[in-house]
Image 1 (cartoon, one colour):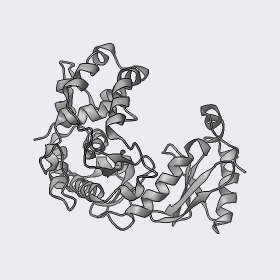
Image 2: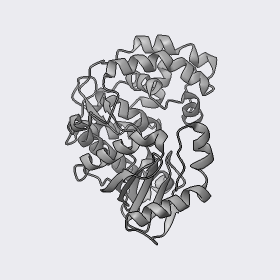
Image 3: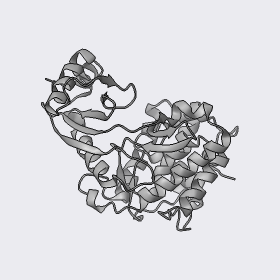
Image 4: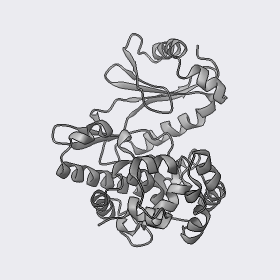
Length: 321
């Protein structure tokens, strides 16, 4: 009942339109034994996602993103019950019609950390980011090889080369000012990044919007959205952490990295054995090389040092006490 979606134009015409999407979702729910369950579409997310009653979440992937659906189902099954924080339990995944895929998962309890953040006392914020660090340490310690057939990029060094070659144009496309653009090549050339790091399973979008908390005591209750997962250098995961969890707060990033470095996963940065080993310049370089990097947006959100230099920006966003 859902039409095939393979182009950006088809995506724009179909995916946002509930008069098209909902009949297909209702039909799929019927096939999954969930006919008649209340459907509420979540507003956030790149893919169409629906709460199905109180216990299930249904995420759909059109043909253009079908591979992402395969990846998310596999990652959810791989991490289930293995992290110190809950992840959605995989109920079922498979194909629908016209190239569409779906992932049916359990619905996690808790409130979005992004929505709750203004109400959270400072001491609880520090404990929460420590819990994020612990969860990341365990995630990065899992063996990623069972997922190597569905998660990229494969050759990490080649991935860095591709991202570096397109970094200036990517940022120019997002409207970044020339004064920043002209610094990018020299900055990236000056920051050594390992081309063959120890391979780790990466979430890649660790942000408040993908974390859930319990307002009764402010504990971390869940992490979700493993659709863009990758296998690569663990420092890459701290782009989202620094920009969207600690948001240039030096004290919070210090707390999170300390917890990561001493956590169950014993995370390592640049060979130091502790999370604090991730140098600010290294994290900003990964920010510029991130698949979804948008420096102009980050500057509007987090601000910048007065000298307008990338070297200073690295410490401004990713420095710690």
